Length: 233
Image (cartoon, rainbow, N blue to C red; front, side, top):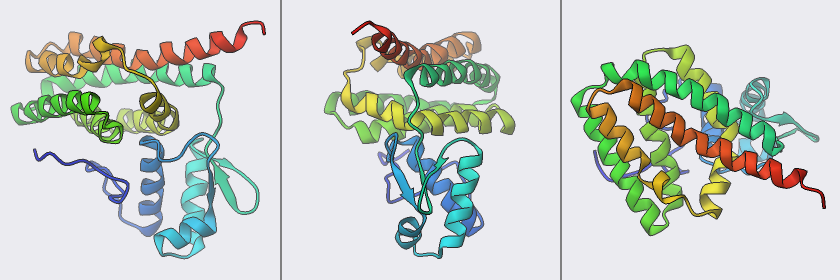
């Protein structure tokens, strides 16, 4: 594996294949949500996005309507859509569901991962630790996605992977804000290395528990935000 990452210029992650123009736009915007390129409340103008992508407004409108039907965007005014501004309780609930589904996917995937794929996971984990040390948050966010979905793809369960991907797009704008603005707990910084080691040992149960622990950090973070909001002022 080379030391490269997906950037905002490379519109699709490596595990996504898009065919039609409509699908490419859909996947591109979804990827931008996953990596936190759009913030909660960001407005996506159909006309501006069409100009940016060098296409007419029709396929953009169709792609954004599809994303709205999946509750990844909300219809707004003047031919535009926006990223939902969710209360912390709902975001915490989404991370809770992610933790459970991703634990299941990991337990299914571990027996299917090849030695080469595990090598790549270990390499990604080390790169992520270096990203944390150097403050390379954007690289970390993308490598985090590649690490997790390299595992989930090995579950060979398309419905499960799709459901997890949808939740990543919902939580992406919120997770990215936290990663960019808060210091990660030291234990969490090395968690992906421990996940890779558990997979190497073919300990599916432990790997699943560590994945759930990783995602549960989001539950705890946004639950704390909820508690803070509920405090009397």
